[in-house]
Length: 459
Ligand code: GUN
Ligand code: FE
Image (tube, rainbow, N blue to C red; front, side, top):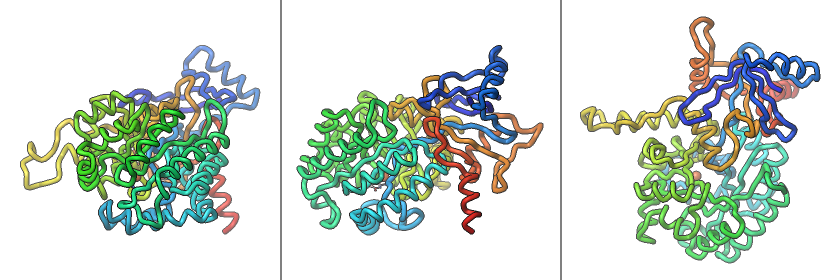
């Protein structure tokens, strides 16, 4: 039982403050009950939990948030975080990214990077991550094992890419048949690693993007999706180059092509989707797929700003992706800020030479609670998982925020800041230092105090 003030956005754009509430967690890590402070049984539940020694009471300056969902992150690009962003997407892939990803043939390198990454993400509050790994079976399995061992909820994708014209010889699947075989093996082995109806770590079918895959590979992956029921992730309509490339090859949009190959399914995760058309949005909605909005990466690679408001108005499922390392921040709190800024850039426009009414697109900006919803419950809905809010039946994936850590940039001014103000301040200014504890499915998986103590001890 945890007693304290929690913030969440159970529906899009609506902040709910659970002030001094009691959150009861069952032995499977699910929330069994949320009891308001003034509920008649609150005092009794609290006393009983204290008596049993199972009560955690938040202190002054401490708040609970739901854990963050990163719908799109490239695990092998972690060593490239914060560099190599000087080229357009198609150059960046060939010049920097494929050579780096090819190194994961070395399993010990993979383990070293992936361990550091998963720890960093948990410390930044990412309780669920949807990963692209590399083409390598063993290294991709290592990522799944590491997520499992460290307790992070994850979808892990061994990347499929076999097109001889778009993938270099040193980094591509041998052919479609081999890639499909390995994808089946990968799925089976991840399912063995985390068995059961409701595993923490799951495989996800991952064609890199249409340009890097042959028709035979796309077709086979669609069949595996139908056979296994595994989710699918890919990049979709990301940049001018990418959209035009697909249109030249198929005379259709990315979304249409994915649909033809059976890859546009319930809870398929489409990264970016910047250039989707109105009919693409309708198709995405109809199939129940979702978009991983990656606002930071889009400023570098997309040549445009994702029409987030349009997608939301059409009831398309949307969450946030860091797109590490096309995005240079692993933090989904940063993702909220970037989504807010991107939406404002869309609203206001960018060219001062135009008159205000020609410059921007009205009804584009999002609110702080909407950004937070994207980062939590929105991401959960896109995956079809009960995560991202504090309601009974949902998983207790949560963060403990402490405003009193010495490194804090967030201050609560007594008599000035309401609870809503504090929430907004956290979303706009909290850092990794404020995230002092991370839970996944009721278990503590990262603890800032512990990390600090250990760092001091070894200094
Ligand atoms: N499209 C294909 N591969 C990638 C990748 O690694 N990052 C991004 N942002 N887009 C891609
Ligand atoms: Fe990406």
